[in-house]
Length: 130
Image (tube, rainbow, N blue to C red; front, side, top):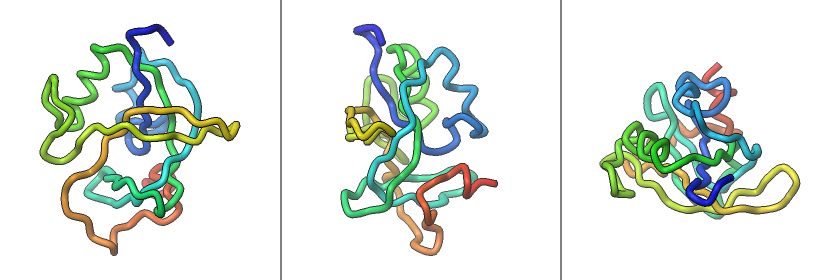
């Protein structure tokens, strides 16, 4: 990871095997990992609400350069140069890697309303999506 790269945690369609993983072209895979939160089916995509007492949310950590980070922000509805959009905001969180080490990474957190009946049990969108 070069000094201009930043780490992002992806938990839904941007993960390997997800319908939008192609958008991660140019990113460097770092590790699988988990964060704490509540995941909901919003439509064909998930929304995550960070919650230290929540479920174990499964995802992947990537190193991305500034250009790709900007492209991903736009994909998530966050304007260039901002960290908060209408549906998602980009916030820093702690990721527990598979080797039990932690690291800090950006994650896109859902800001809209949630429906508890649409909560993704097990915290793994790719299993839910199948």
